[in-house]
Image (cartoon, rainbow, N blue to C red; front, side, top):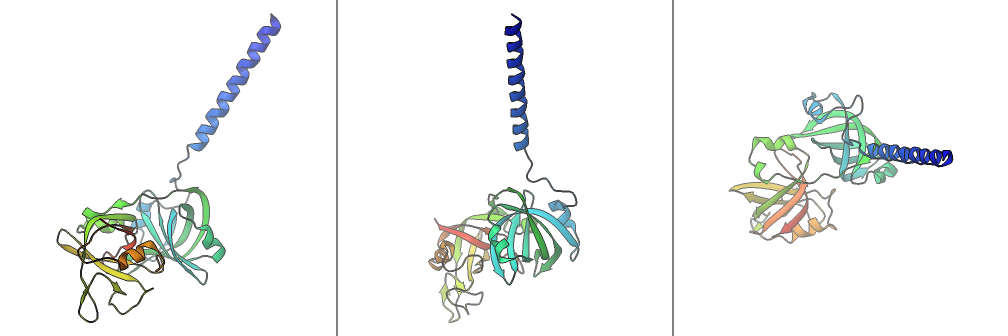
Length: 250
């Protein structure tokens, strides 16, 4: 009888320990990947920071634009806002590690160029965590003053109409190589699209999406009057100038 009672008590203790261990593991997985480390700015604090001041942010890589001579240009975002990292100090080996979704901590300086707010002279370290943002539909914000508050985010535009661009010979075309038509295959692509009577100039940045990518080829195949859905990053240059990464003709 005593042996039976002792065995039952032992089994109860074992199951109790297993239950505690399971709870610990579940709690360990319930981590807020967006929580900021000590000394790291929230997006609101970054947005309020003065130009030329030092900033420290944590965000997730959404796309890599270019690498050259140990400098990388990268689009990043967290759950509250986006950060454009211009010529971040980065070896070629580390650039390969900056895959989509990778979490990084960046220390640099807030700057502005032609309306584009960015972080320059930055350094970074890779952190635990991975997250890829869903594009925010910015179609209805295009004509609003609110749009700039979403600068550099991954965005979508739907149901827009391809409008004419004017080539160097005065003819109407669906896109231009370079903003003024002075380029050739392999250069940036510029094209006009409209919504509710307003015309906007969008860009396929060749460093981000070169002439081997689906989006580059899709823009080269556009016709004036096509209705398109698009995705990209809400870049700014003397006004909104989205860097488009996907185009679908409806």
